[in-house]
Each structure stands twice: as structure tokens, then as C-alpha cells.
Amino acid sequence: MKNDTLEANGALTPAHQADAHHADDEFPTLYERKDQYAGEATDVIARRVRDILVTLGEDADREGLVKTPERVARAYQFLTHGYAMDPRAILESALFDEDYSEMILVKDIEVYSLCEHHMLPFFGKAHVAYIPNGKIVGLSKIPRVVDVFARRLQVQERLTLQVRDAIQDVLKPLGVAVVIEAQHLCMMMRGAEKQNSWTTTSAMSGEFMRESTRAEFMRLIRPRA
Image (tube, rainbow, N blue to C red):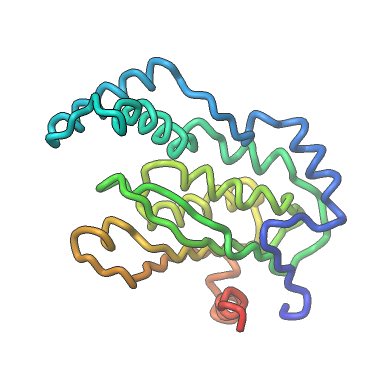
């Protein structure tokens, strides 16, 4: 399997680039970034943020803070927009029949999420691989699925499982592997205050439960020298 493994960093292979771009045109609402926010939600969140500022002893009407409640309201809506996105629809928008049965790996996918316990960010990178079973997916859809689940209130363990399960359910591959490495501000700037700590989580299925396949995947995601 070593010689036939396909690696990528979010880029589409030339053979499917045109098809995947066409799929993007057909399904723009599945993952198109739109800086549009629900007016009612913005107003409600902004009022609560203003109350928090006042409770903390701040002057919510001073120049530097007067627009902060609305900014925070919009920021939280953007940072949690994954709730409104459908990972199945994203994957199904770019499925292709292909007689390829070796490992496909997309690694070093940037991850930004919010810890659900303190609503502080955690961030790092995800590595996602699968072994096709007659179907492949446009490579850009894998990072998009990571974003769907990351842009929610999360714990890293559940995020890892959700990415694996979404790909397994839609593609029905021979196996899926996901590893996420992240730093958590809730542990870095408060609490334990360990600024150099990293958390690694993994989720495997199918062929990746075999020691040899898992070992190849882990070797391929090592940092480049």
C-alpha cells in the first residue's frame, strides 16, 4: 500500500478538479461562507454580552466597548455556523465512481473550534484518511466536513468521532482514520495553565483497525523533516 497512497493537503487531484468545481457550483449553499447573521439572534446575544460587561464592572458605553456586544454576537454566530450545515449533503455533492482501493490521506487540515465547557478556543490540525470501496470524494470536501463539526461547541473527542462517522456513513469505505492534534486555551490561559501541552485524539474504523494499516497511517502523518 505504501507506493499507492495518495496524500493531499486539501488540494484536488487534476483528474477530478473540474468535476468537483462543478459540484461546488451546483451546491453553493452547502458550504459557502456568508457573513450574514440573524437579526433577532444578534440582538439577543448582544444584550446578554452587554449585561456580562456591566457585571464584570466595565462601562459598556465607553468608546472601546460600545460596539463590542454586537461584534461578539456576530463572532459567535460565525464560530458556530456548523450547526446549520449538513455534512452528508457536502460529501454527497462530490462523490465519484473510481476503481481505487488504496489509502487516501488529507493531512494538516487546520482546525478551529470552541470548547463547550468554557467557550474558549481550541485549535490545531486534523489528519483524515480513508480506503475507498468503489467511491471517492472530492478532496476539498474532507476539510469542509471537518469544519462543519469544528464550527460548533465541541469537545475534541466527539469532534474526532463525528468526522470519522460522517465519512464512514456516506462513502461506505473499507475504513476511515482520523487524528486531531490541538491546543486548548481553556487549559493554557486558565486552569492548569500549561502553555505547551497538546491533546491528541484518534478514531479508526474498518481496515484501520489492522495494526499494519494503522501503522502506515501514523507514519504518513508524522511531521515532515
